[in-house]
Amino acid sequence: MCTAISLVSKQNEVFFGRTMDFNYELDLEAYIVPKNYKYRGDYLNKFYYTKYSFICTGQPTGKLLAADGMNEKGLGVAALYFPGYAHFQSKPSVNKLSVTSVELVNYLLSNCKDVEEVMSLASVLEIIGVPDPVTNHIMPLHWIATDKTGKSVAIECTKNGLSILPNPVGVLANSPDLTWHYTNLSNYMMVSPQSPGLKEWGDLTIKALSKGTGGYGLPGDFTSPSRFVRITFAKKFMQLPSTREEMILSCFHLMKLVTIPKGLVIANNKNPEYTQYTNFMNLNTGSYYFTSYYNNEIKCANIKDNNTNKVLFLGKIKSRAPFKHI
Image 1 (cartoon, rainbow, N blue to C red):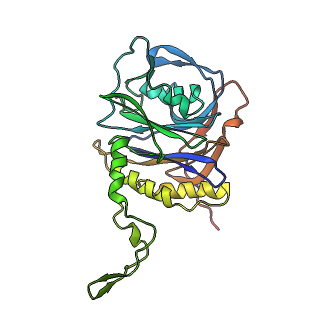
Image 2: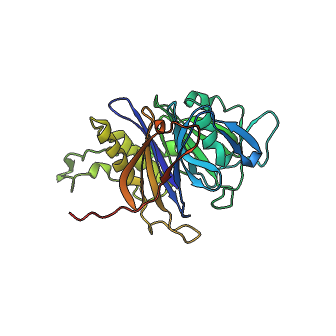
Image 3: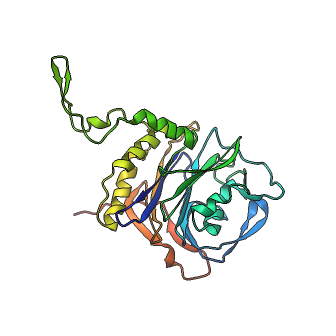
């Protein structure tokens, strides 16, 4: 489970963010990978060079496998869970650009400058399913990519093949596929941030019981369809603040609508599915902001912070906030 979203500020800066919801305990770290860095794609025994530098969050497993990030050109990519629908190739084909599912974020951030270049891969890209080092299973994934122009696409690989779909809403959650989620939005056309006025039912005058009645019917559970609807509604009616700093705060407030506390969702392995971190990236400035479950303090790094030709370790995503006595 996860939710991703892109937002455009009054300054026409694009903010791209996601929640990481998972039922395995992750030990994620933040990195900046430099331009022209050579790294090995271990699963297909290939070497790659980074055409562009990028900042990302990844699990330390002996190799850098990014779950999300953005590059110096303003492209952001995130991987989300896609159970019951994801279907990958088991081995590479001839004359195809073969990239493993766990390395796709790395590859796109390293090689594509914008969404147009991501879309150009549709006819040549194939995704190879390999076990990830956290669950030791082939994790069912799909991806969202957004650039600093605000364009967004979803990358979904099913039994029908690979699709790179325009995503004008700029939202992605989990299963079903993106087309289904768009159809489902038609069930919520009447929701509004404004409460309805007085209604006459025969000789009886009806009035709203409280503010917020216009949103009656919005789903409040943590399923993927419900989170997709809820965050899409919030994005449409969110009041854009006047400054960049306020925009960052608004982004994190918005994501609280789909944040999952521990204990409210229990996975099949009996572990709690909860929001382990939330991040937002300013695709125009290169700033990367994040919070974790135990620390709501917003931390920030910038892709320009790395002036070396080596991978720069920025620290662990998880940390506990000190409670200050005042």
